[in-house]
Length: 212
Image (cartoon, rainbow, N blue to C red):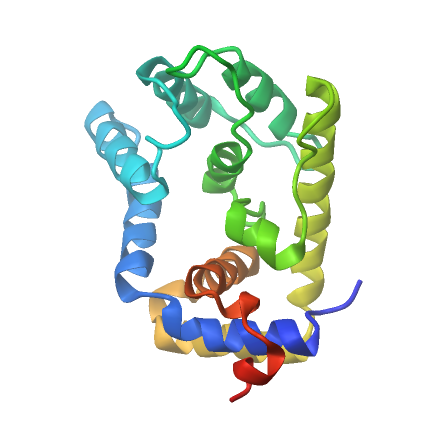
């Protein structure tokens, strides 16, 4: 597996301008609060997490959010094991406001990644940048398996990028800009850049515009 293409690298380098100091500070606060183990600290973490990741979207209910944080605080990751399937199935069982059930792929990726930054995030910007998405049709097991396969591929992709000299320069520049990110894992920094690229619409521009 190789590093990013020249085009992807150019987009990611430009996207660095869109990584806002306020977003970096909010993420650092999340990590600090997550280390708190008392009820007050966890309550503050939950409120900050809900704001940062928009946990009121997708029609999810208060009961769903309560279960989500039970799972988040109770999760133990085992290297080589799939953390996504049991989480997705547990949360799928809780209906949304309109009475249906949905697989909340993005929110579950954020739950897992909170425990270990080597696990990638998934959202519409990641989907658009890499051209990946869970199956929209098919049975529950089929759709979940598709998502898990994409997350495994994405983790392997970021690991390959971390060994790429050109991408390392982009990461070094991001860390120079925000020294608080020195200890952040490469997948989290890559996600920040992909998110900024998607939010800015950089990956949608013609290549000639990108380099103008």
